[in-house]
Length: 248
Image (cartoon, helix red, strand yellow):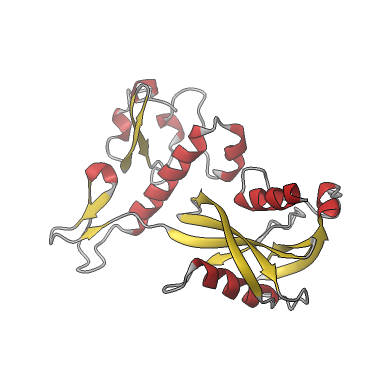
């Protein structure tokens, strides 16, 4: 990642923009600066570096540690943008603790938030359920695991059961946690699970799901791109699918 010395003006033009301390690496402290508020950020960047808007396509192209840093920066700056004023008294907030705490003149504080999301691969016998959400890009045939936000007062298992029932009308049991993944779009933590279906009959909610289908491991291993694609290997949905395939 570029350092202040790499910028055309030594980073002086960045001083008025929101910044956040990300941590330390082998060369010293790392900071991120939100260029999204600048009319034309390109002249501020070092030669050869271009601004980008979408982090997701870059994840598989960067060294392992850099997507996590970019995800942290994106989540922190989104939080800063959406918490410019105090939720209790309405006064402007100022950054403290390297940008990891906001405070207003009345002493009220705000801290970065992460929204928990469950993502679950539902299984029935030797088949697993894959679906296309209404927000999926129309020019791709990607299918994925079901997902949804955890509501206040819910356990992880309750959120999985509710989301699966709401989206495809299937009751599940045996919810089992597998892994998690930060998902900075803009500030979520994906909690990956497997769950067993009581009955494979589907009742799809068209407001959430375009289509859903039960597939075998052989169908996934030999998937025709003209039929369906799997999520990128960097996505936790793919990890859930791969874990299921490896079991067979």
